[in-house]
Amino acid sequence: MINSIQEWVKTNEQQIKSTYNHLHTNAEISWKEVNTTKYLCQQLQELNLKVETFEDHPGVIGYWGSASEGPTVGIRADMDALWQLVDGEWKANHSCGHDAHMTMVLHSIKCLKEIGFEPKGLIKIIFQPAEETGKGAQALIEKGIIADLDYLLGIHLRPVQEMEFGVASPAIYHGATTLLKGEVKGIQAHGARPHLGINVIDSLGSILQSINSVKLNPTVSASAKVTMVKAGGDNLNIIPDFAEFGIDVRAERNELMSELLEKIQHAVTTAGSINHAKVTIETQATMVAAEPSPAFENMIGEAIVEALGENGLVASPVTPGGEDFHFYKATYPNLQATVVGLSTGLSPGLHHPEMSFDLDALLNGVKILSVALVKSLKQNLE
Image (cartoon, rainbow, N blue to C red; front, side, top):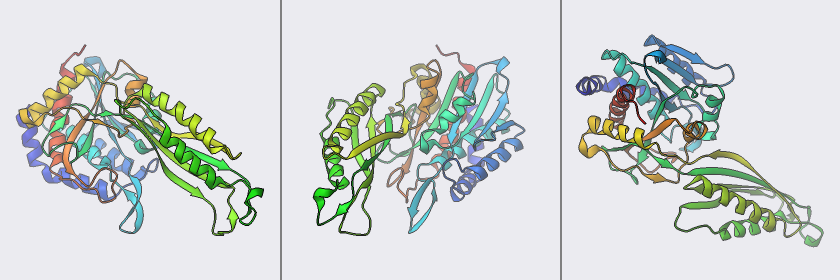
């Protein structure tokens, strides 16, 4: 089987890269992946697969095989791009690698189809919208797409800071992420009479100081930082009465995130209102930390070795980055689920507007996912 997969990937290298170039060139932001959905739907239909789409949001699910014959295995790729300033132009930009993820998932299915593989079980090919919002996985959970899965596999490009080119890990241990947005309300006044107003910029200064003063166990990775501040208008002689601010919160473990958020809430509301301003804060997006699936990860490790050789397998990285894939296992704790970490030579870094990587990595990804699907349908993991 591995020889057939290797040969197929070699023969179809240009087709794989062409698919990537199409998806990269036609990037769409979260919840707007309409044309991406149409394209992927067409690709799956050309493989004679049953396809499901949704009336209320983008995304597409392909079905191959029968659950009555074996396990149900999901393979998932995220679809959305970021909205970024690229070379002076605001545009949808695939700087997180979701175009690559879609390409590898699609072509792993094409590979197995065209070499004559017949699944003893059901494969669900899941193209999920809106990962960057932290709410795309939840949308598919609400549709019941994940409820009957035994295994769920994903993949994500890794930057040069984590892995050298040509290797892969059986998991990525993403941390928990929460994005908070706050508002401060004060009272306008003339700059000559500040005592008659409540200056929200004073409140922002206290909020910044309070966030930097939050302390947690230093042996476990966690951080909180202000990432957005807006206050005041064009007139420099007016005490401003309204401000907005954003906070990016990261934690290695879910329980640590809960502790951190409690401390931030107290610190921000207390410090920000010390001058009698009114401070509110609410969650804009959240992602849970990865929970390991050791048996499944071991099997994926075997797939990486088959696809890339003994030297191709590396330890799974621990990263403060977030990924909404992990909501699937958080919702269904018995689900065996993991995200392959694929080295790509990616630089300068994920979410950088000029992010690029070695497209030969796509070939490695297709090989790994193809082998992993075959192994998943053959094994009964405890």
